[in-house]
Image (cartoon, rainbow over all chains, first blue to last red; front, top):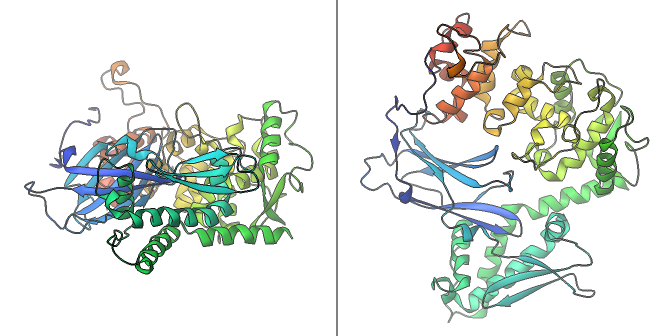
Amino acid sequence: MGRLSARSNPTGLKEVDRSRVFISTSDIAGRRCFTLDRLDLKDTGLSETLKVIVVAQAGNTSVRHEMGSVANLVHEGRSLDGLDRSQPLRFRVLMYEEGNPKLIASIENLRPRDDSQSESLLPMEPADLGERLWRLVLSEDGPVLQFNSLVFPSAAGAENYIPFGAMVLPEALRQVMQRIAEQPGCLEDEDDPWSTWANWLDGIGAERPPADDENDEIKDAWCNRVVDRFCSRFGFASRLQNELLKGAGND
Amino acid sequence: MIKTRMLNTEGMAAFGKWLETPTSNTPLAGLLDSDTMTELFGDYEIDPSREFNSRLEFGMYLDGQLADADFNGLMSPDSDGLWAWLAVAYFGQLAARGVRRAEHYIVQRKGSAGSLAYRHAVRTSYELVHIHGHYAEICLKSPMHTFGDMTEQLASRQAIAHNRGFFQTAHELYIRDGKLKRGASSKPKKPKERKPGDRAGMGSVRRLAIALQRLDLTYDTEVMESPQMRMVLPKEFAKWSSAMPTP
């Protein structure tokens, strides 16, 4: 009996060049997402009706997301929760006709577009804040969320404490968005450290900020819409409610 | 019946320390309902005195008791304390033939080769039954105190452990009248060591796992049902499916 071969191509699978796809990752206070930024299949002869699946793999863990069709790709960020964070992250892009699982084309072993983008957009650092629980520091290099080092010994401790995430992160993000709304040009300047937030906004399906000559009311409304999307994505209210219900059961 | 609880940080540390030098198959007296080392987890109940013939039976029981819980939430690190508490609750059965390494009772998400969460005696029993129902029998036929090589082979890789078509196919090929067919779990020899005509281990469940990885390169195996999967399997599996109805 012959050995199972990984090298044959009995189904006529088309391997698409990796340069045609860009996948980026972002990390907001420990919540990691990926975004399928671009999938260029021009001149490949592939049908626009093909279904697109992205599989993220890290070590022996994996998550799978349906990303629409070639003609109608989903560009919103998708969760990478559940992956082993100690192992390298790789992606597969699979394409096939709806109803027939035989792959028509695939792109294998993709890395996130730029490893630097895997770093948190909103880094968290311990700080001596006296009786204050947290503080957002905004600088030309980007935002930093400081937390009280007496209360939380590590960033993971703060991130994993559900009330902290539910109540602090949305307000911290709103302040970040206010800064962006004041200087929206920062998103367009690739040399500006703040420009990385442009991908994040696209990833969660949020619109870009209003023009800088718009009034404060319009800017505030935009900030709030972004925060609403962020909260919906991570279900902060539901998570906190579940946590409180657990606590109520203790009474 | 008692309400489900979870070990808190202190409880996990105490249980972990006890597992380093276990003195019996009864961990820390009072840990199960300790006010300081546990807290309530949701609104579920279990019967800690209930005995199980196999991990399949155990997984089915837990799947029923946790029917209203969110599966992804139970698999997340937030629920690791629940699985440790359940391991304490049924420790007598899980460690009836001796206490194993800590990852069998406390979820370990980091190991030298990646996450060891799949080795958790309680979590994996629940997880496989929740996803595959009775098809999980292929891994969980073992008695409560046995982890089993089949579980190590199939549950260690999430892409296989969560693949419904694979478990359906494996169940159909290798289980007959509730028993694993002879030779189903045989280890095939490496090609270099195999003599001409030597078919030992060919078509076994280990080879099926390899075949799935190969098929994964040309099919979206996550959406394939068992009949579709069997149609594209290599010939070496034919003898196992000869008694099966044609798809």
